[in-house]
View 1: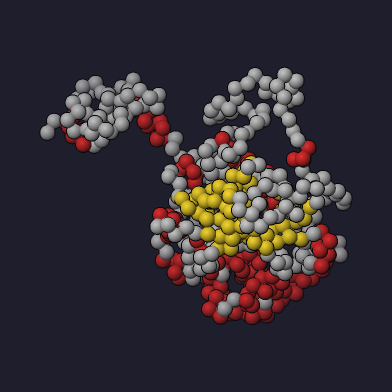
View 2: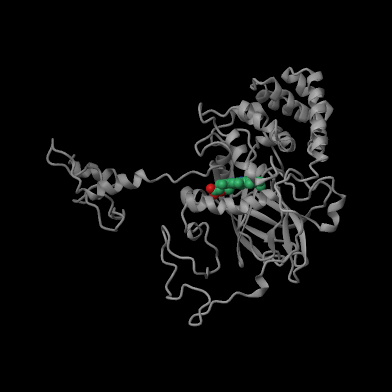
Length: 513
Ligand code: HEM
């Protein structure tokens, strides 16, 4: 068979046309110029060198060399789906956000993720799971960048880089090491609530469809009259919450979460979640034993109200274009939804858009998955990968010649603040009550799994002091929990109670400063 015909079988266009299908599209270079040969470089004869003038070859290799963009510094391993949110409640009395009108539909894009491990890691590793939702509303994009769990490890953004450094692989061995992250957590008692939930089977979900989601922070909702209330959001799965225990998660196939989501959506079994909201007024804060803006706490006794449903009904037709290039940022808010003073949320307002300008470039928000449905009108311009959003000469404001308006109805709420500017911890910490409540509500089997999961990692820790302090935190959450963990980790109970006494003495001293 002639060589040209064999090339045709491989899908290139055959000059003689005897093997290539007439309907197959002509191969081109990035400049659109047709390509005559895609399997052989341009060489000088049989034995001669490859020529630099083969621009098709150079372009092909250069494009390949640049296929990877920086992966997300956290939440690198993820999977996405398109969907639609249908509001069921009129929230006009608490927020002017335009999406909460009964029956109104807003398109969404969702990305689920693990947190710590890289983009090529197995999906069964213990982690909170990201649950990030982009609502393409008619007043701009609102990103609710949440997690599967309702709380977080730390309560101040200034600790986030340290916490992530301790959880990521060691800079020396390149291995994740419980010695490092429990070293960090032994000085971070506020993490006890989150660690308890992550080491329960919630840390290894059976599928992304069978997870709830949480906005975690309090947000400020503002109505048309400028009245404000604070709110937390939660997604409740219609599929029910289902998890794997440690042993099952260890055997879970590499891609089991992505495979499940893609398979179920392809089969028409569209996963659905209710969006719920809890609200609190500042007048209710005094009754709480904790700071209302502390993200290591749930608002446990505050009722939920259903505000709508989200259905995921399509997987992206290109993973990179949609899932990888999606850029969710807590700072993407819409009129009626504003930040609360939560110290973590305040840090996140900066961090996401900042990393995305580095990861995807200054024009990240004009990529198809990120751009709003509404027209963007401002004077931001140029930068890498700009594709021509500016046709006018007037790129300044104010301008008499071509006016753009700003409407006072969209001003953010005004609020009073008072206090000393300082770098101090919050006063109402209450680190152990909620993990105790969570532990006591678990079934006997779930309690046993939690103890086994935690002991598995704590038993890797070589420092007896770190281990003892960790067990003493769980003991303060619940005596039975701490006692069982002490047994499972061979920490003498007398050492645990001594660490508890030391902790209480140190906190009492801090409180009097
Ligand atoms: C992703 C920072 C806390 C949920 C990210 C990314 C950064 C980051 C830099 C990568 C974003 C990107 O490349 O597009 C931080 C900082 C935090 C913090 C500085 C604390 C101050 C949290 C909390 C939650 C959360 C409390 C949950 C409520 C997520 C999710 C993603 C993410 C779901 C992945 C979004 C996606 O799918 O693209 N975070 N994070 N993070 N973070 Fe955080």
